[in-house]
Image 1 (cartoon, rainbow, N blue to C red):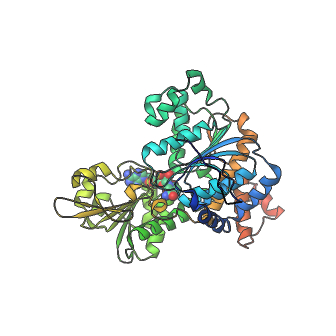
Image 2 (cartoon, rainbow, N blue to C red; image 1 turned 90 degrees about the vertical axis):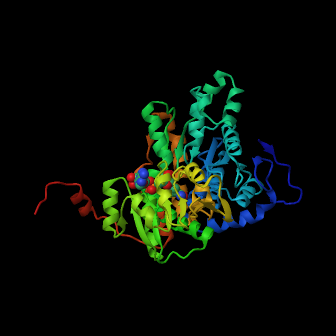
Length: 459
Ligand SMILES: NC(=O)c1ccc[n+]([C@@H]2O[C@H](COP(=O)([O-])OP(=O)(O)OC[C@H]3O[C@@H](n4cnc5c(N)ncnc54)[C@H](O)[C@@H]3O)[C@@H](O)[C@H]2O)c1
């Protein structure tokens, strides 16, 4: 699967002597313009990149990243490269790659990139193999596919990996498989679902190196998950369908950080928002925010649009689809495409649906109703739109780059656990972001610091 790119004949800016598997290298200039456009909205990452350029904190470190290959990720790659890292990048979702950005990464920035929008599962895992082949010392995941593949191999659980990964791993001796982990200093994880899996690995005692859960930083989930997913999910639904949200009943399944953002933005566009939850506190928060809260079965009978964002399995199931209105639209913005039971939908419809627009598939049911599925149930904001705006990814990827630096410095003394980034770094990211927005805030006086740290004074 690893294709050696031929040197580009004409472009003097080309640095492509790197390995890659991408769609079309001729898209590179368009990709670069897009990367530069995003960069303008990423002042925190830019500042880190400038420091990395001077200090080279990742000099010679082999880093494999499994992330959505977007313009914002490209800017993260530039920062890591400026820090001296030796990079390999593969996609963390078959539909989220921006092919022009992938081309620019190879042609203009010399980053070994393995990602093609619309790749099938075999290609997806071949690309993971290419990242594993890089023998990373630092891993950077979005959904934990890279780390889980590595651990399955190292634990000799080859039946649990995709056949492409198994084929590659079978060519290694048992010693070589176990040695895959020898050089690993640690890793980082971008998203909620990945963090849940990594914590499960830690609990099961199979996590073999430390991980920083970037998602747990305040400057990540409070902004990326809420405002980023909120805006870009609505963007994905609208770009795919061009429907009017005003007056529609829109169901958000899951009122976590992402769900809050989607519900808030959908309401802002005039939708009547219904929230479904399984966690009582979160359901109560949704009620007090003024949303209607009800079981999904009740919502299924009345809603026009459904968006799942739970990280859970089969949230929308066959019995929900059985009662949906004709023309109901289903989309998912959670990490994996298993929140909507697509096999059940296929069973109901007697096969795959018909593509009626890009990323819109209509499933005709025997009773005459048609139910629409967007982007094959994959992250609709990345598949049908462009993912989060750069301004929020600025903070997420500032966290990622500082996590890599922190791991290189401190990894050897950490245990095989899931960690969060130190609060000073989290606050520093917020401080720089505020400064870049021209916003100043107050600071505590010495008297206030003393007061807040004391317990003696009362009424
Ligand atoms: N689309 C994106 O770009 C993007 C960005 C960030 C995170 N994510 C993904 O979105 C998902 C949610 O992330 P989050 O940070 O909001 O997580 P979260 O844990 O804050 O929220 C998830 C919520 O879903 C609820 N839930 C679980 N099962 C449910 C069910 N069957 N019905 C209704 N509610 C249910 C939980 O109680 C929880 O409140 C994860 O898979 C995460 O990885 C996607």
